[in-house]
Image: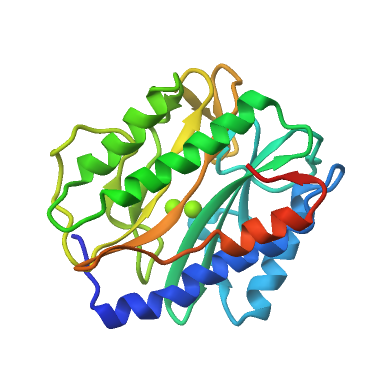
Length: 264
Ligand code: MG
Ligand code: MG
C-alpha cells in the first residue's frame, strides 16, 4: 500500500533527508588513498549520532554498518571493512538517517583522483539520469515514466541498467511501497499521486547489466567486473511538481575542497 504524505509531513521529512547529505559531505572530507572503508563508516556513524539521529542501515535486516560503501565493480551494499581506497577508484556511498521518526536515504558516487575518463563519464551520466527521472515526477505521470527516463538515457551510452535492485517509497520506514524501477515503459505502472515520497536510485554499469550477490548476503557486484555507479535522491510528488528532499550541495562543496577527489 502506498502511503501518501501531507504537505506538513513532507516538510517534516526534510531534516532526515538533508542530514544524509551532510553526513556524506563529512565522510567525503576523509576520502583519500589508504583510508579503509571501515574508517569512513565510523566517521558517518559518529556524525549521525552527534546529530541526534540514528543510522538507519545499522541492523537493518542484519546489515552490520551505517554506510554501504561500494567500490568500482561493487554495485551496491558493500560492507565497510579493511578494503583501502586507491587512486582512480569510484566509490558509491549510500547512507540512511532516521531523525524524528522519518527516514532519509541518499547515495553519491565519488571519483578518486586519477579516475579513468570512462568511469568519470559513467558517473556523470548516472547522475544526469537521476535528474531526468526526477523531472518526470509530476502528478498523473506513471512509475514506468521514471524507469523509462533512467533506462533510455543510460542505454543510449551503452550502459547496463541493473534489474535486481530498485528505488522505493520511504517515510517512517526506509522501504515502503511502491518499488521504483530503473527501467520501464512510458505510460506503464501506477500513477504518481500527490504526497507520494520516493527514493529514486539508478544503479548503472559500464558493461553488462548482470550482477551477482556474494555469500555475505549483501555485496552486489557486476558479473563482468565492470565498474558501476549509483546516485540516489528522495523526492516528493507535489502539486507544484517534484520536490527533492535530499541534497548533494554540501557533498559537492566538500568534494571541491578535497584534493584527493575529482568533481564530475
Ligand atoms: Mg540508499
Ligand atoms: Mg534507497
